[in-house]
Length: 119
Image (cartoon, rainbow, N blue to C red):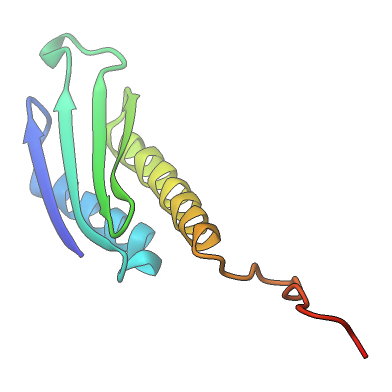
């Protein structure tokens, strides 16, 4: 997994960068083979005026699915990162499940359909 963090008009302190790196890597590690690149965009929309304006956008490239985009706006940047990573985990899991169903994979806990007649 390749991770790129971009910050424009956001607090791009090393501590936020490290926090973001940890959260994304831990959150998406179970999809490691499927996730190619993750781009994180951090932005303070209103600048010094404040308000609910810290935006975290994750662009996640998933093999055989394409690019998925997850965006959260919150008044706290670290919370926006947490929420965006949680959405990305659920979204990538959903797309991987859909991909498996399209391929005809058997879901866990279910018997495969029988072919032919039982003699």
